[in-house]
Length: 154
Image (cartoon, rainbow, N blue to C red; front, side):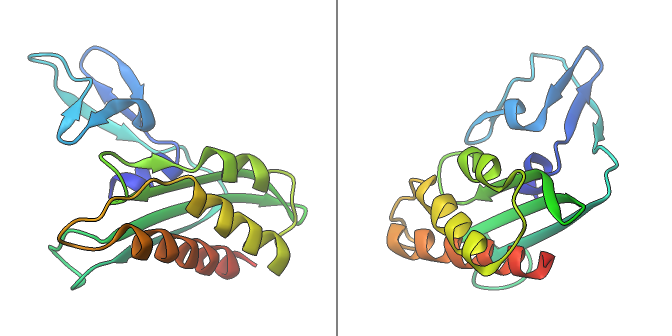
């Protein structure tokens, strides 16, 4: 899923250039690809990280998500050295939770940090109401799935 590419710091390589995943997608079904440009590789940096993906939807496979998220953490000496957090299905494109990533850097995971990070992440999205879900549900669910991912990392 595309949020995982964002959170993991993936780079999309074409026959002409390399583009970070979070710069590659520009809108619904839109990318920076030029005419006749072909994706040749997706590179995910190898790190000693903990990563988590969550998808909330009507069924597990082949369904458009109501909310999805990916979290990647590099933890060393008990502190978060790197954090990648991204959401899908909460806007026209995947949304990176940059403020939450900054907040987590250098922190030790505990319930207070996790609670604040979940609230911060939910505040970084601007979901809409549509046939799949309400904006309120998406925002509340985003906080819950980030909290669960961070709790698993402890």
